[in-house]
Image (tube, rainbow, N blue to C red; front, side, top):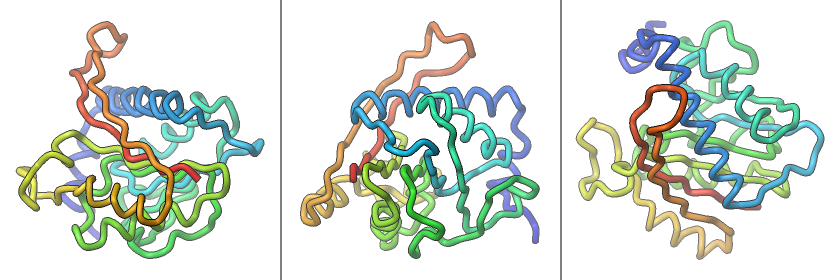
Length: 206
C-alpha cells in the first residue's frame, strides 16, 4: 500500500527536525508529570502511543518515556495505517476509535492526534484511552493551541477542530479526574534551535 502524502511529508523531514520534535515532546512530558505528580506503580511501565507520524519516533518515544520516568518502558504504537512505520517493533495496526487492544496500560499517549479524528468520533478515542488504563494511570492528549481555539469545525490546515470544553464537561459527567494543562514554552536558551511552543494537554488521571 502506498504511503499517504501526510506520512511522506514526515519521511522527507531531516533527522535534525525529528530530534527537534522529540525534544519538544520530552519537555511536554516533563511538564505533565510535574503537574500531575504521577509516579508509575510497576517496575516496567506500559505505554500505548496512539498514532505516530514517522517510524523514527517509535524508538525515540520509548527513550524519552524511559528518561522522564526513570524506569524501563514497554511501548506499543497503534496507528490506523502502519506502512510508514514498517520495520519497527511493537507496532499494531488499529483504529483507536474502537477499544484499544493489549491493555491495560500505565499511560496512553496521543500527541496532536485528535485533530485527525472526525469530530463525532473524538470522544470515543478519549474514552478508549481512559478505559484501557490501569491504576494509577494517565491518559494524555497533547494539542496545539489552534486545535482547541479555532471556532470553525475544520481548521485552516484541513483537519478537525477539538472541542476541548465539550470533552471536559463529559469527563465531569462521568466522574473522571482530569487536568486541562496549557503552556507557552520559551525555547530561547535550549541547545537545539527551535521556535516557541503554544499548546497544552488534556490529561485524565485514573
